[in-house]
Amino acid sequence: MSSSLSGQRGKRMALAICLPLAFLLLWEVLGQFNLLIDGLIPTPSAVMRAWWVWIAGPGGLSLNPYSGTWAANLWFSLERVGQGYLLAIVLGVPLGVLIGWSRLAAQMVDPSIQWLRPIPITAWLPFSIALFGIKDFGAIFLITLGAFYPIVVNTTQGARDVDKNLVRAARMMGAGGGALLRRVILPAALPSVFTGLRIGLGIAWTAVIVAEMVAVKSGLGYVLWDAYYVGRMDVVIADMVSIGLMGYLSDRLIVLIENRALTWRRLQSY
Amino acid sequence: MSSDAIHIAGVDKIYPGANPVTALQGIDLAIADGEFAALLGPSGCGKSTLLNLLAGFEATTAGDLKVYGQAVSKPGPDRAVVFQEAALFPWLNVWENVVFGPKVQGLSADKYEAKARETLKLMGLEKFHEHLPVQLSGGMRQRVGIARVLVMEPKLLLMDEPFGALDAQTRLTMQELLLDVWQALKKTVVFVTHDIDEAILLADTIYVMSARPGRIATRIPVELPRPRNLDTLTDEHFNEMKKRIMHEMRGH
Image 1 (cartoon, rainbow over the protein chains, first blue to last red):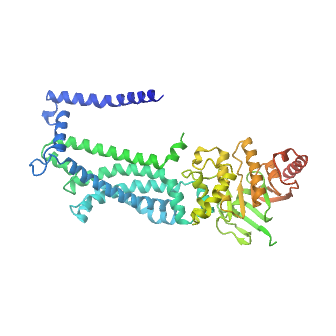
Image 2: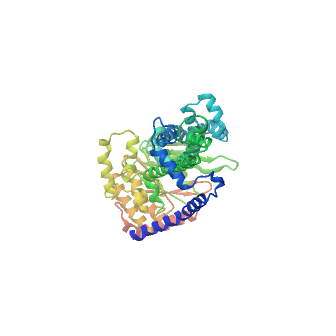
Image 3: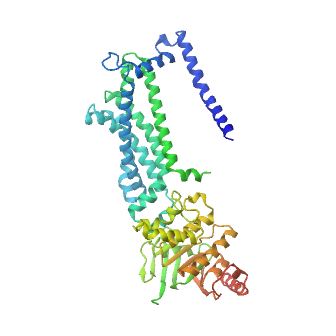
């Protein structure tokens, strides 16, 4: 059973990797014959070489900013996403639970959120720079803002949809407002909360790249734009892949936490 | 009068709106301490609404409704409710569900743990502490639903068609279990059902309700000896009783 399962898994992997592999091969071959827009676009092998230097090349006072600086830039971005995202969770989840639960909170807060939400985070950039300058907090502000909306909206939805009888049961057993929110509304809303967390994380990565391109002088977003200006398309592509990889891995992490937190839900769907 | 567990006088329940619905009209009811009362009637007769008023989930439109001399204003652990679909918290295991009440009431663990263990054993759940509700059958879930309210030692037990969603076989098992538990604990019970057999088997007094508007049509004392068990269902007196009630219900 398990061997046939792992065999199936292998087959799925092979099928999934077909297309990207063919694409990379075509790209490499076209590049070798100089057919890629006058060599403007580097081949995959050139990208890999540049990436390797960027990761493991000599750093320090080297004149090349794309040697050995990958980890540091990655960390800058990661730190900003982490801080902004955590702030969005800390603000968004309790507020969402409250809006979903209390009609008063919904009537007071929800309209403001719905009015502000259509303003894209990119439109906040000048405002953010004016307010915080070319500093870390400008980026964190944008990340928090971007991730906040899907988190608060999904949490609200989840808190609103809690089974009425669960609330009645809790109150019958003597649960007051606080216990009700913490022990019933929040856990019942958790599946929706995680939906919001995953969407929010994607937006957080978008926000950090945009913010770093414009509003700060470090991180993967900054390198992306900077490398483009000096014509280092190989670094640009290596940077793009790095961003994608980080986005993918951080999403997997959320899914892992979700699966642990929502065991009861997974069992329910069997 | 003073020994009444439940005292209801002239209670109306009207749902307002463009077409107001009179769910209950002129309800008078007195249920004694330790009595097992069944509210029997077709769907739409307001029996669940009456239970919700007693639980404090909904408010009366008019009239007087007291439980142990206290006007009901909100839900509380003195009026325990067993729901039709058990309404367990799906993210908590059996043990956590059962100690939920004492825990949110701020009792310390040594005050309720022994009681919780004992209650779970009484309900035949001693081997299922770690199970999640989703891993249990409907009957087992309802055992947890009963255990979690017994652990709070309420004076009054309100049961809203608790076995209505179960298959016939499981329902019989649960009815027998409830008879045993009631025999041992002698709590005041208000039991909502549309099943005549169930009402006769379990109750001391049956209140037959009629619909549109919901009102109490008759009060029928069940004079079958206790302790009862499933054999009672085939008793001669049982069938007589059933015939009478069916006649009564057709008349309204």
